[in-house]
Length: 152
Length: 423
Image (cartoon, rainbow over the protein chains, first blue to last red):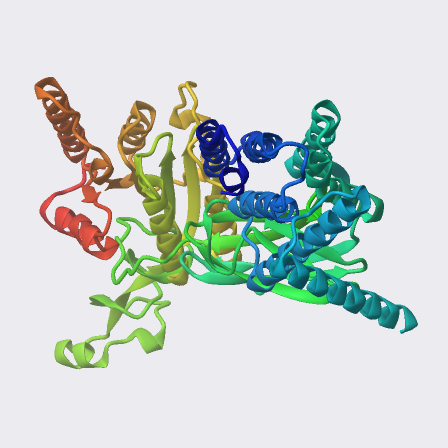
């Protein structure tokens, strides 16, 4: 979706390639093949890279979302592969989902920081501002929690 | 503990490498940004990964149960180090079905946490089982590394065969010399009246039948039947069995053998066991509760073992088959060696009763005309075998899966009422 939305040209090729990557990813999940899952994720990343290339040297605004989305997809895919062999108990499922959400938020923050450090234009807008504020607040909360645990 | 890398680790390494390489080759820093979270997770997870220390112990609420009963397997866990995801698999023997609880299961344990999990197991079949190993697989928080360990436990579980309802047993034709609950044909000390005879010197006064003496004008004494026990040999044919799914002729035969043993021993008879099959074993006749446990334990270890060795009854020690013993054979009549051995026993004058554990409910007629014909011929051959035994004076009763054994044994009594055994 991101790849197609961001593509300035070759959208047909990118769409076909993305569809193929999704099929490979789905097949890997159904058949329990981690290599196929990896290939599917790499394919999705490649689609987005091609779409970014079509836009020229400017970094597309969706970079941080794509980063978080691909990480979340990878985490969910490997979690589902693990569930196929041994199912988690209820409490563990909730913890795992919370962990995936935290990692995705962490990926957002990391991607924002990296883009800022590299001096690239990450797009902008209200949504990104909100994400940035949430990430900063989350980081502060994390630091506070760690400091409190250390004091104990 | 054995440390292993998960497929996720390989995938994350590959994605990180591809992203960074792509960034270099195509001069697109966004690709490096895309790969960065994967690389960061790899670095952090590998840096903090350490094997968890988890102690496991198992316990069963009972170690002796009857078939179809349930036992609770308790799994005690104690984590000295936290395990963010611990997969636990108990090596449960195939005839023990998990009816409550999950096996395998993935749980999380905090440092110092003690936890008890329970598995409810249904004992679907008799036998001696051992719950051996608990397999543990711990993953780090990111799921990139696993540590595997098998904790060896040895929990024995004896599952005794479900008893068959038996109202009446087959009466042995002959009794032995020891005291018991059976009215013997011989006269002696006992309770059952046998006959009257004139008083002779040496007769005990309490034996005098005063009513008969008054009528005849001289002293007459009552004669009584002696009360003796009998020798019963349970002959189990374990050369072959017919099986469909979870039930088979051997299972039926074992249940019947255990039930018959218990009932005959309760009547103070001496009971022995001959397990005639690929693995030959026997127990000399004995009485009491100890003998019951001996026989049942021997039955629990019974299984069909493929053997081409021709075995005859001569291989058994003489004392295993005492003279005048009642031999109850539990056989599917599938193997010629057992069929021949039973005819041999009858020819040697033993009181033989054959309970044919019918393989027909477990057999399926092959398709096609020739298949059906072969099936009919096989059934006719079995019928001919039965007639051969009956001609030799040994009753054969067919016991099909689901029928009560007591009704089947009634057929033996009916045969004996109408036929005379040639001994």
